[in-house]
Length: 624
Image 1 (cartoon, helix red, strand yellow):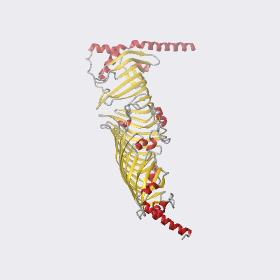
Image 2 (cartoon, helix red, strand yellow; image 1 turned 60 degrees about the vertical axis):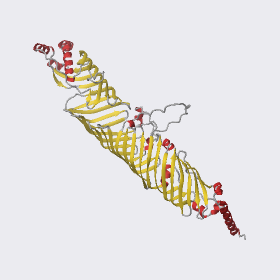
Image 3 (cartoon, helix red, strand yellow; image 1 turned 180 degrees about the horizontal axis):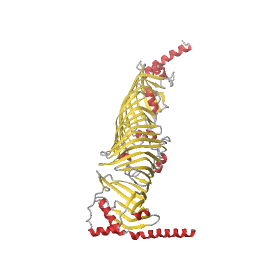
Image 4 (cartoon, one colour; image 1 turned 90 degrees about the horizontal axis):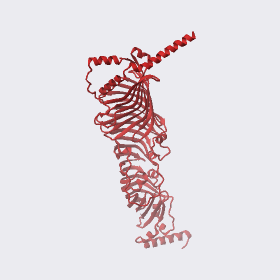
């Protein structure tokens, strides 16, 4: 019994093998190849060629194409639109015996797509139907019908793409982006049914090159597509969301939501080969975001947008107008410290021998191509230790030229209104800044800037300054322009000018200058001319309860030091010159004795002071 079963099984296996081996003879592949080339050429309006068409028997029955090429559209590059080294359509065997075609899978190996656009809807992937070939004679049609059996397709196939390359070139913008080492696998493709899709490869653009992976469930209907959910990874960045898209008369339109789970972006910078190290170790430590979006021929819009960067949160709207290539932004930030995100200073190198060299050209950056219009509101803006609140900044960035005008902010009990203009596109960016201060508490402002702790009071003033450079230090070293300021109801700490005015014996050296006291004043005003970071003042004026002070001198911002001469005029008409010198925070005050002796009438006034000193000593020691 067992022997009979084995014999029967052998006969069945032999029959199946015989059927498989006979399949190439059942189909006239030459005729099928000709009809396939003609159909594809007619459908695309392009020249289509196929090197070889043959049956593949293992591991599945299928039809294999070798060297298939679809030509490019007229007016585009010489490279073909698409080439594929090897294409296999795998089918199930038994349904073929009943002329039923059940496609198991389509496999494309080494596919290359060259997508090109000239803008304005002129693309090389928009097909035009070619003129139909002359119709066959009745005899030819009958012969073809006998040679090529008619199959009824019962099931759509899954798709596998192995090691493909897709290039997208914008000929108008001279930009090329690409996907390389692309692998795609799908489940069975059918309308109105979910299709499982996975894809991986490497993305190449002008600014990055990084691996990516996509997994999603797609549903396709007539002109409508849905990806829900989808998960996308680019290096260490992950995106989750839902997308719905449709094909309209103007192109693809889409909407949905995207989410970026919290991640540390610094490893991403390294993976993208970005040589950027921020100034602060607290910068770019954590990022997350979520937004609803719309996309279409007119551009895209992210709204509402929520973006978390370290301890800052940004909300609002961000979009792009495709017709004008202008980004539109309306954003609110709760708090932000931009100094954290500046590139860290590189170690200084030894200066090369002087040679006549042309300055190096500025390396193009993303800012050089951006055009941005909009409004930015910041609840708290910190630059170094200076804190501004309720900041409003109009955004006007045009190919590296930034105009922020007018800028409004609250500053230490007062306000600032001004402008900032900078040109990032130049090798050494010029910067113009100016504006007015009103009602600002000068003490906290000066302490935050690190200038001095000597003054307090209410500051008002205006300035118009120019500089150049890519760092705060470079801007400070080149700061040039004009400034005027006034401080009302203030205090000069560390120097009691009223004490000097009240007792002329200081000039005779009988009293020591009080360094721990201060001078209250009703008003202080001065103007300054700045040249390369050094402010020169010739008209300093200060009025106290007992004296009037005039002064002149310099403030060296890069070196954090000052050198001033103050002339303290007493009610009696006597003038005491006082030097104020030294680095910020460690200023020294002293009587300028040499200048004192040179003052008009000093000898007579000193004689009077000495006589007054003698009478005082007589009273103290009881001398008559």
